[in-house]
View (tube, rainbow, N blue to C red):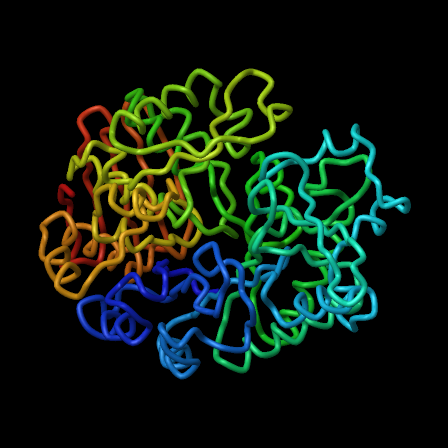
Length: 484
């Protein structure tokens, strides 16, 4: 995976389709990004692409595999593989609904007898499960040919049903399917595969059924090995305490820095750089950094042990006051101190009070942080909250999922704040010092991040209280220092 900046976008959010994205990357965004993460462009029955019916097609509304291959000519293309689940409307699950255990695809799915031989989970076991929907993560299926009722695992969805049916990643059938999908991606020029919801794949009685050891490591090692055989890199997507990310990095896996977004907000809110500096000084290089994404700003469990419960509540209050909303944890068992904040839904620009200087400084901190910076399309364009999208979809995450028309994109790129962001992205891609070593220092409200490689140096000094920063860089007309 190349170390330069990546763009993160839905296939239809920057001008309407994949062709429009390619035109942007060859036009006004030319030379800025080494990679692009296209959120699921496949036919899907829900969750804005995250319930794919197949991985072998691109939804015609977005374009074709030819568009993906064209993006791959100049960029490392990343696509999602929902290793935990597939759509209820997929051919495989529809055949299971029709024929039940007689279906050749039956072993793809997690029927409850695979976890509890009786098929009836004890209440104590259900209470331990890390829930992503109300009640238990199970759904009943009535087999059309026999009338039998099968209970299958569905981690996500509503109380009554789910568009996403969990896969049994330990079964030969599922492993064969995952291998076929990875092989196909590689043939289309894809370079990186994000393993969406991978923390949920191991179901084991008596556990939380989330990041279950050692099964999760066995699976990650297996799928990383298969991907490597096709010259692919996998990026696990896991929201858990920071210790899990340390383990991922120690085992040689790529990971996300899901701590950074909230720590940057907290640093501005408290005018203190110390906590942020401590985190950056110990961060691995084998990671992808974000400030914003299609989901919310992570809080719990990602910040457990890093931010106090009081700080979590304070950030939630700030976000609500600035037009955002909160995605709550459904299981009270995982919030025994009363803090049920899972994610904060807001654009990062709005979270910083739509203050251009503070926003540019926050983005500079991300771009100077260890790892590969991934810039979300709304953040790139300094977008504000989209309350209409929340009202239209009923999904609080819609506040940060605005779909830009070509005229809106042109207007946004013309704004001074966006031009300042683009200049920083270009610096991050082009300056050789970012291939070297990072020195981190802090004092009060001041954070200093300095990259050095040989004689090349690029340093950021951030005043979190004043919301301004200064960059010093060698090799730019002999060496310069300027305010951002």
